[in-house]
Image (cartoon, rainbow over all chains, first blue to last red; front, side, top):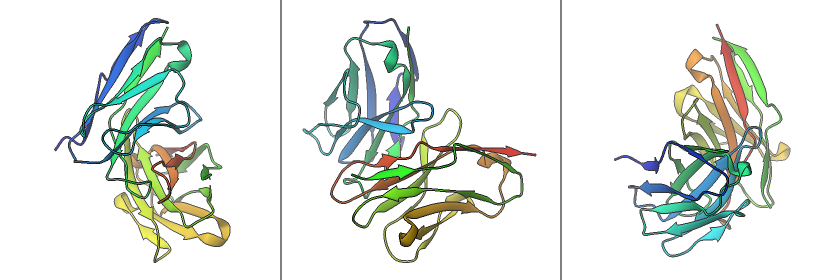
Amino acid sequence: NAGVTQTPKFQVLKTGQSMTLQCAQDMNHNSMYWYRQDPGMGLRLIYYSASEGTTDKGEVPNGYNVSRLNKREFSLRLESAAPSQTSVYFCASSEGSGTDTQYFGPGTRLTVL
Amino acid sequence: AQSVTQPDIHITVSEGASLELRCNYSYGATPYLFWYVQSPGQGLQLLLKYFSGDTLVQGIKGFEAEFKRSQSSFNLRKPSVHWSDAAEYFCAVGSYEDYKLSFGAGTTVTVRA
């Protein structure tokens, strides 16, 4: 039981490049989330998927797109990376609503030059 | 809208001393409250959560938190800190009406020998 896994662990991009961050969970959870973590700002929600087939914007969605590929997988895409997107990205999953515990992956450290 | 404030950015405590981390929330209905811990380079791990019942909640690693509705607070405590408690701690609030958790900015705890 791996929990929530994320790939890659580290990534360096040049401004304007694109990339996709992958996330998978093996807990049969309905809801999945993408956060970014920046110093002094805590975790900010980028996008979430309440259930398979649905996605919704969070607090800071600009510059990102997501795909809920199936119940297990939820990917985050940066179409044209900008230095402001340098951050640590966390994927999380939960059984359902905001009352449930969210389980987090180990994170992806992204640097955009 | 729900929100969380963690007034202390950084706390330094001696090993063996007690620790208290403050958390204030803003939410109109009954909140679900969480404390997470993030060790360096790791994802977030749930320490404890509260919804209803006894206002003193026990968590993992010897932590406890007290819910005080009159003060809109959910402070985290540990009677005797170990060096391994050095980490960043996040308070979060959730609700039935929403799938999202709102996180505070975090408190970094340094443990000195």
